[in-house]
Length: 522
Image 1 (spheres, rainbow, N blue to C red):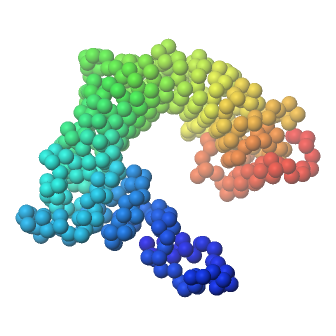
Image 2 (image 1 turned 90 degrees about the horizontal axis):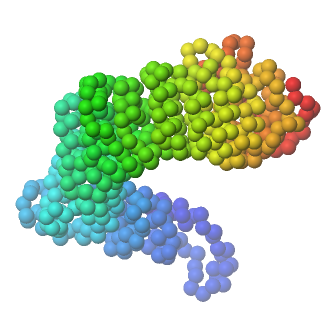
Image 3 (image 1 turned 45 degrees about the vertical axis):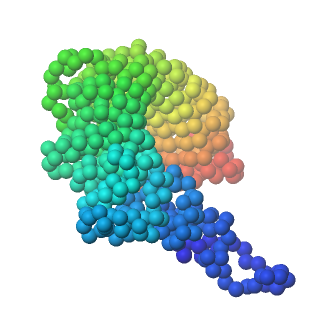
């Protein structure tokens, strides 16, 4: 704290000695910390993180009042720091020890703070701390009330052996739960996490946002009936998906990424036994990390998601016929999609031409899947595109079929686009400077590939003319002499890396209007 104050004061302009002598009552003596104006001290406190701010609140009554004036809603407080501020933990569980703790100056300074905390993180805490806080809570709060009554967000870290013991910290005001837990025993993991979810749901029925990460078990989040946002790093089964839909009908956003490929056994059987799940308010579903084809098929075919406008899904392990059927089904059920992220080896991308309201389109497939005619149709059908990304992975080196004319198609068709990330082949393809239409709203341009080294300068002029407002440009140049194929910064040779950096420099120089030898393009 002292260093922060000195640093802040040292940044202020030093008055000239003559001005000090000319002003009655002013001297050039060093300023003491306690002599700082309240306004200056308050500005300093606002630069501190929650840990150091809490330490300041425990110094004295004046510092406490100033520290508590800071907006604590913006700070995440560590429980360990809060406990440390309460002073030494009692040596036993006697009522006398608890009363003595409540009468201590530490408690008097922290009691007001615990009611102001809205974000709390629990990384590690000995059992004695839990008992200590529970005794304090029972002494100062009515039964069933939270130790932090205004807490809106709590994070239980993976290092906690029993996160279910901390439910007494939360109450009816809690809206956000972050739970990370790992265990070498799947049975222990299932028991602890299930108990944690149930106990917190019992005390906090208005939880709307849950981020949970666990290694191998399947959990029921239906205990949170008001849940609107779920971000879950764990396994999913048909049964748990149906429980989620039945228990959380208000869900608006779901993001699931299983830690492994293994799924529950019931995914393979009985897919049509349960009633059709329904999520009428679901707007965004990210499940591109789910590799289990039966589960992906079940979710997309059986779940009614009439409000869905954003989807990320992996069709790689789904057969060609089924993948294209699911894509057609999505087109028929949800024609108003605004964001699509699709992975697949055999998708019929022409289907995407039937969507007309896409603003963010991300495609990942082998290079030979993409044709300029197909992409031009998609682009022309979606004039409000903001972001276009084409990425790919393939074991063989295949030249992209996309030439720079695709950029001009984007310039003519899309008025709002700001980011485009695509592979371009500038070998043996015509592109001209005179006919290009400036794309004024381009902000990021990435992954321009397969540019001949001797064509970099004229192509840089071409891009500078086409994208005059570009403020972020990245390129990877692959020399055709060693074959064609995928773009990966780790696969580029030293010469290719140097040429990529040179290409970016040439572009920015052209954009700034530096002189060029000859405007004629090759």
